[in-house]
Length: 206
Image 1 (cartoon, rainbow, N blue to C red):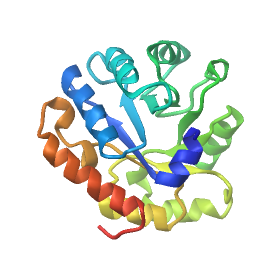
Image 2: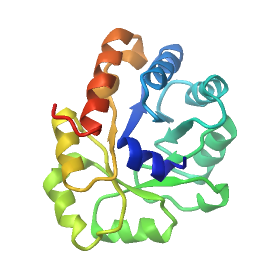
Image 3: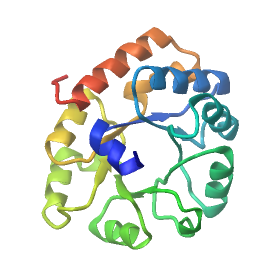
C-alpha cells in the first residue's frame, strides 16, 4: 500500500519529534505496535537520521516510515539514505523529484497549493492548520475537490474529527498524540492516545 492509499485507509499520520533519540525510537515502535500505519520522524528530532535508520531496521522494508521537516534536497538525500520511504516538508521545497518517493508538501494558500502540485506533491500538508482550521479546509475543497489534503498543526482529537468530516484525506498529529513520549514520557499514555486517535480516524467521536 502506498502513502496516499494508506492515508486514505487509515486517515492518520503520526509525527514524532523529540529530544531523546532512544525515546523517539521507542515512540515509533509503540505507535507501530498500536496499529498506526504511517509514522513521520521529524528531522528536528535529536539524531533523527539514526532514529529513522534503526526504526527501518526494526519495522522492515514495507513500513510507511517517513522523514519530516525536510527543507532542502540535501535533507531529502540524507533521509532517503537513512531509510525514509516518504518525505514531509513544512513549505515549498525544490529538487525532491529525483528521489522517486512520495512527498507530502507543505502549503497554505491556494497559490502555494498549485505550486506544490506542480512540484509533484503526492498530497498537500495543509500547514499550519491552526491558521484557518476546519472551515478553511472546507473552503479549499471547492476549488480543489480532488486534491488530497492532510492538515497538520494543533490537531487534537476534536479537530481531527472536524477536518475528516470536511474532506481531509487524513490528519497529521504531533504533540496531541505523541505527548512527551519522544522525550522519555510514559508509553502507556501514548498507547491510550494512539487508541483514541485511531478510533476518531475510523469515524468515532472524541
